[in-house]
Length: 318
Image (tube, rainbow, N blue to C red; front, side, top):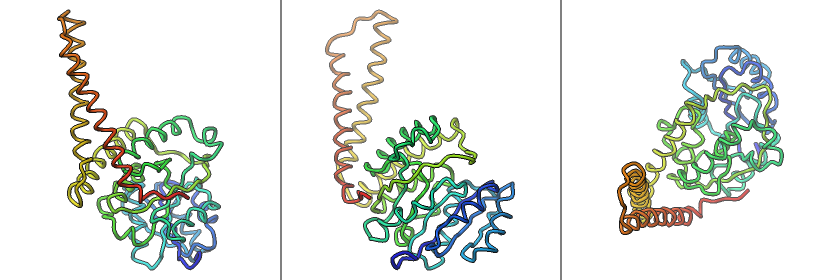
């Protein structure tokens, strides 16, 4: 317990036999319960977790019948948390990548009731570019930019960080059955949290990389997360600005993207006509295509500005 709030940590684990004991052993004493979700591991993860449970009565183990992905394991942990009586649920991966010394700082905004969902931000640490693998660092920056746009949390950085804490009331407002079950779960959750109008806070945490083995496959993970963000963006527009309330920014986005697409297609067609077929292009045609692009880009920028203003009350600084 911390400042009168009971804290439960859920630990999703898949093939973390070498690191799961270390992870569990370092979880602070103020944590009231630990839920380990074994995602049908093929190594000694489950046996190691059971051995740790003998020495730590806080540990409760969930054995999944089949491997469902990190998102499925997290959701199972959330459901188990909701069946209990804890106030705050924290997610710490079973690969010892999340510093337990950062946990109190991560919990502070929730304990003080300044936010509903706190997430770690590794990109604020000075040595992150040296510690984090270059490909993951670059990918993280790109996905952070896309997640800002898709989720409406324009202040959030390090969208791929899974070190998070959420209040019971906020979890109860989410449709856990619809949460994505793979590596895109942090991005998907942020989109759903925005629709639930949850206050989100970024908290600086240390980046740790060492013995863990990444299960991320770039050629499949990148397209998958990109599709989650695109679909999630339009789902958020429909839910927040059409069904639950109306705001013209959804029209600005729709017409803006349409005009940009028409402008790009028109520019490509005009270029082909001029370069390949040597056809003359009138000035009026060029001006019309340029206007499509200009008005389209301006509409998208206006929509982004309105979205930022509309979500300003969900922005919390640590």
